[in-house]
Image 1 (cartoon, rainbow, N blue to C red):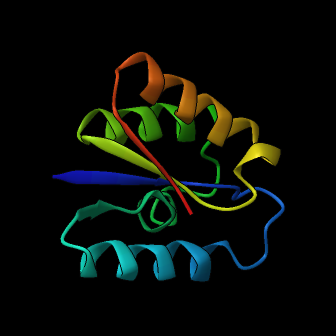
Image 2: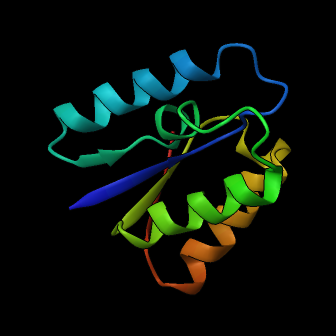
Length: 95
């Protein structure tokens, strides 16, 4: 089963490390992990916020669940991802 990592990225200096740590932990638990921080880091610098969100929803559609990192409540994007996952009746897990 695939799980998508969601959490604050904008304004968070250590988000790559936090997402990588979660990816490692979830992989060890047997999940196939979609780490949007790694994918989004490959997009052009002029990618807009809404374009990032479109990519995020496409990646989330591939998954069975979402894993919410601590601090997600302060992120508008993470809140949108959680709402999307809830509407799709996905597995929801919290750090």
